[in-house]
Image (cartoon, rainbow, N blue to C red; front, side, top):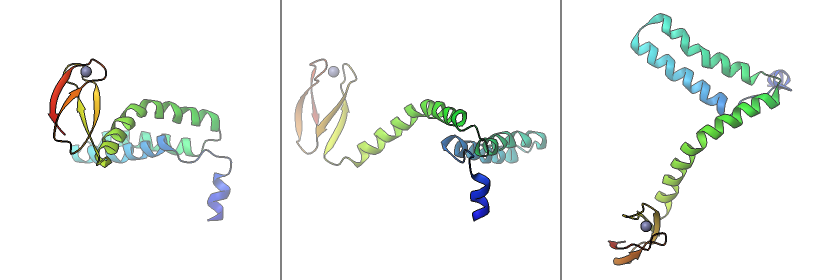
Length: 129
Ligand SMILES: [Zn+2]
């Protein structure tokens, strides 16, 4: 394993964008395999070559900026899934949307039918929690 360490010394290595490119290459190759057009199959190698180029690159700052920009694009999607995960783990609260202003409201679970006042628009509505 020392030879890998020697080769990768001073090089960028894998990151989120590289892993994404690797999976993109696999997905594209499967899709083109299913479609069955042989010349399109080579398109699936483009992300893989880009991934290998990035991993072996010595321009660390340029590669980390690429990864940073990629993560900035991905962050709203990541936040969306994180919010779903956090809400599904929260067993003591129920999440509702205000019917008037669509603001997200967090309510305690198991309180029965209660009158809810939206803190944003002061609209009152009755719901079971
Ligand atoms: Zn409201």
